[in-house]
Image (tube, rainbow, N blue to C red; front, top):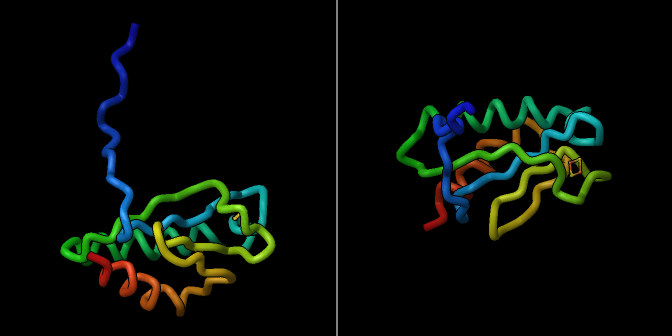
Length: 96
Ligand code: FES
């Protein structure tokens, strides 16, 4: 019997968490959701002191308006384009 994989890092979800829909079968994945997630993950990696966390999710229930990014406890951003990411990131970073 193999040991459970304990290398996966668990992160607490809070107002600094950005949930990025990357569903490949529905709207967000086809419209660049994974690319948005990559960009936000890079921003979070570049600025660890911001406390912003990025989680990839499979659907936020707003498929027709994808790609979607949801700040946990806050707004869902629809039809997100790369240019909008710094603003979304800063809003998350500003949460306490
Ligand atoms: S596929 Fe992204 S919200 Fe449903």
